[in-house]
Length: 195
Image 1 (cartoon, rainbow, N blue to C red):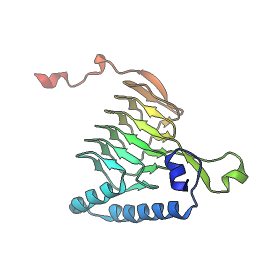
Image 2 (spheres, rainbow, N blue to C red; image 1 turned 45 degrees about the vertical axis):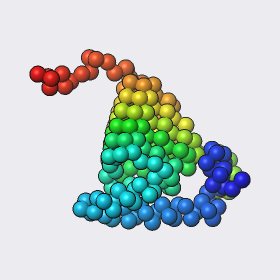
Image 3 (cartoon, helix red, strand yellow; image 1 turned 180 degrees about the vertical axis):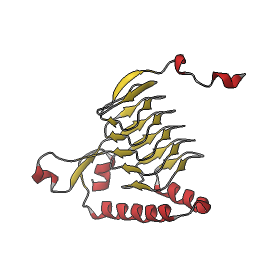
Image 4 (cartoon, one colour; image 1 turned 135 degrees about the horizontal axis):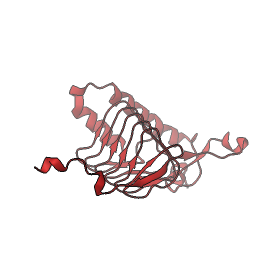
């Protein structure tokens, strides 16, 4: 089994492996180009981001700058919006649903490293998946760690550090991020638009 196959299987893999290194270099080259484009070059920007990511739905938008380790492990659904300074360390698979709003300065960290220094110094790491459901809002400056699932319709408050699963249709905040309360009909604010 190659190191890339080990990574894709969720096993410990050597991040110093030449094939892995080449994949990161390819991503860094595409990211540098993407981040340097002007708003008028939006067509080229979309082509670059689509070639970088594992999959991308229709009418998604990323505000540069962005950073990915590989990009190929990131999958994003239709109509999602990702604000500036998004970082995805995607050693593990990152699934972002449909109609997700991601605020500025959000980071998703899937890698984990051995705790013993002599093992950590070998370059081995493991990617743990992150799943973000449909219709989720991630506030600015949120950090999401590997192994986390955020349920459909959840709202994560700005500055939170998400270390464990968040149930659907809940507001969650803090460091560590904890559920505050469910989202209910009492939260409706645009009812007057129907008049």
